[in-house]
Length: 73
Image 1 (cartoon, rainbow, N blue to C red):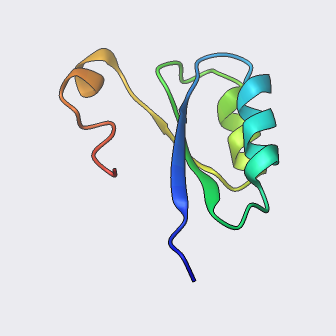
Image 2: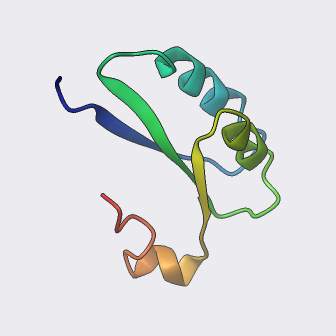
Image 3: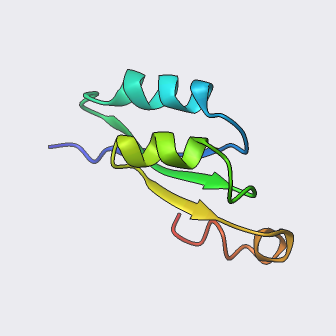
């Protein structure tokens, strides 16, 4: 089986677009949304991602500038 392409979504608000993307690729054979990142710990997008078992990560400005946030890539 081919390796899946992994997508990370950056969002900081309600997450309706992120949820649409997650749903679109939910059963895709080659693409999966693996992570939702946000600089807003209160963003509803984090709850939407968890509903679909997508990992989440909240970061601050210093973490983003240090590349620590996307080190999983």
